[in-house]
Each structure stands twice: as structure tokens, then as C-alpha cells.
Image 1 (cartoon, rainbow, N blue to C red):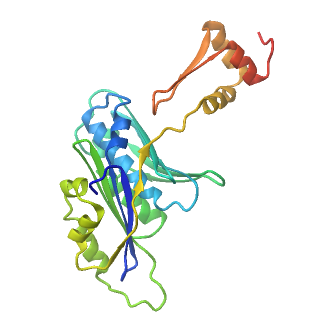
Image 2: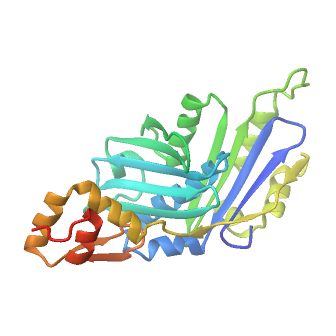
Length: 285
């Protein structure tokens, strides 16, 4: 996966096992440069970004998948999201020193929420407690509980690159001759993968190194890029949702309402004429 910022699906021809690879370089850098995150939190954000892209591979519709953890530790919020067309963004919030490793040390008592938000249709959210010490293991626990499908996830983040490997055992087809050892064999081989290999090798070369004795169909790469979906219209709807009494009280104290997007630092400013227009008022207050 030498080319940066790519997502790639693959399928084991003789087993009901699917897989995905992701590598994030520039898109990860675009997220990190928005804030001066401490190094351990940068790693967490990179892993969450890679995970959100891998999990978005299950989306069969237009929409967004987000991975979010809230806790009472030094890291109070970790959030990464990916759209169906592989646009990503992420954010972390922290206070004080962030421990080097261990989710319980970093986030404290926390929950992990996976939210799927279709452009049209009903929002879905699954929640699991953060009981494991790595994000990958917490996500595997989520899949075991929510989908009852054996899932293996490996996440890597080092030297400014975030990568991941996703494997999932699909339900067996009727009358299919089952290789009972296939899942164990394929996941054991995946466990030999190093961060250097996944950060530097092309997808085909990587899969050939791991699975040269298996028949694997590799699908074309998809490009991943950083993009924030904030807009003047979205922030305007946030202002309206707060109610005109509260907004005009703020305006009475300051000349404008100012909102900054936490994901991309885009700055939006609304002066009184715009606020009047939002609420359909000509001479309010």
C-alpha cells in the first residue's frame, strides 16, 4: 500500500472471509495539524481514523460512520468519522498529561459508541464499555456483541502514518464444504504483520506476503481524504436550535455570534442583521 490514503477490499475465494486494508498519510496529517495533540493522543486518533474507514466498508448506503469514546480520564473525547465515499475527520479532547498507552489509563471509565447515520433513514448506534486495553480489541468486542460475526482488527499508528487490517468471517453458505481451520489460520498469519509492512507495502504485495497459499481476490483501491462537512448553513441551524431569546441575549453582550468548528478550525461569524434574517425578524430587540 505504498500510495498514501487508500482503502482496499479483498475476499478469500475459497472461504467465507472478507478483508479490508487502509493506509492514511496526508489525511491523518491534515487532522493532526488542526491542534497540537500530545503524542499518545495522536496515536489514538490515528487508530480511530483507520478504524472508522475500515468499519465504513460495511456501509451499503450514503451516510457516515463514527467511532466515539467518552471518558473521565485525561482524554475525555476521542472521535473519528468516515463517510461512504471515504471522507474522514477526527478530534480529540484532553486535559493534562496523556499516558503513553492503555485505554483505561488514557480514557478512564468510558464507553465506545459506533454510530451509523444514513443520509436518509434511521440513525443507528451501538455502545460497548471500554473494557479492553486497545481500541482494536474493543472494536472486536463490539462486533462480537452486535453482529455475532468473528472479526479480527489490527490497527497501527507510527511515524505519522495510520493503517489497519480488517478480517471478518461471513455466514457459511448452504452445502458449502467448510475449511474448519481457515479462520484460525488466516488470523494467525495476520498477527505476524508488522507496522513497517502495512505502512510501506502495496496492498497486493502485502496480501501476497501474508497469504501466498490462499486464493485472494483484491478489489480496486479507493482514495481516502480529509474533509470536514461543516458549513455556514449547518452552524446557522445550530444557532436557530438554541432559540432566539438566548441568541439575542448573547448579542446584547457582544456584537456578533462566533462559532469555530472543532474539527477543522473553520470560523463562522454572524452579526445582528444575519441573526435577524435567521429568525425572520426585522426589528427584534
